Length: 130
Image (spheres, rainbow, N blue to C red):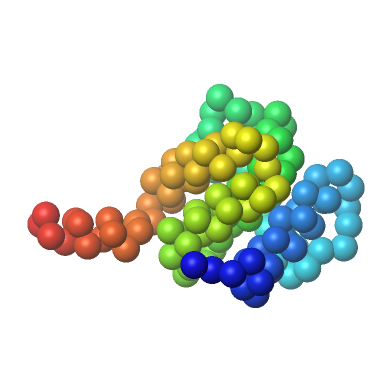
């Protein structure tokens, strides 16, 4: 079980807060948040395709910040997808509304399929069935 004081979790918390603040007005941001902001257009396109019933401009801003961060990590880092999604769901529980964790989990599941990344369990399952 990870601690609330885990440095990677705290880094993501800070990035989500900075991304959320930047949805209202341009603000100073750390390295991770700046990297996400630089790709907002691309990330929003992927999020829109994965949640077509929820236009990006209508999403809860904290959910959008969490989705942008997680989508960025799925597309641009070697972090295992399961870790990214688990972290995003934890952030949604911490900062979002009642339905945020399940919404974030569902959208990221769709994004995972679209970007073609597999979790370790899926890789092993495919190897066994082949």
